[in-house]
Amino acid sequence: MSGTINLSKSIKLLQSKDNQSIELPTYCRKRISSLQYNKDSETLGIVCSKCGESFPILKLEREIGSQLYWKDLHDENEYHFMSETSGYASECMNCKNNITKKVIKKQIINDEEKLSYTVFLTAKNKRYLQLYKIVYEEEITQIINSLIDDLSQRKPIEVNKK
Ligand SMILES: [Zn+2]
Image (cartoon, rainbow, N blue to C red; front, side, top):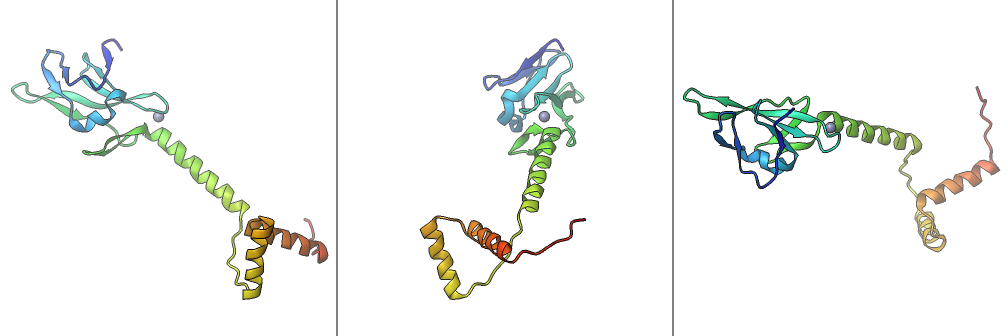
């Protein structure tokens, strides 16, 4: 679109189509370098820091008496507005959801790989385990796994493979 400008900190006022000056709402200023303004359509867009896509957030409207004001255009499903103090998120909802999905997937994989138990040890064994950890520089998990490896070799259990 022609007439779209990228905003920066030095820009304090924007011009409407009929060349009136208007200030940006303060909550926009945090992400000012991600904002784009189009004078022809009098709309303000925000560019996602991840995918680079632009989303409309504000549009100039006129009250009776031609007083200008910013009308909220943003769609929470597209781009998250945090609050008047925090302003807009740095990423669009699409990118944000992709990241959350990845994190959840990673957690599931990790949980499948690990089984955790709470084991109550005798004082003697606990002391031995702690010393072993220091002397052989092995983690408790590693020690217990190698103990089970030894045990399973000495006392194998046949499992019928289906
Ligand atoms: Zn995005």
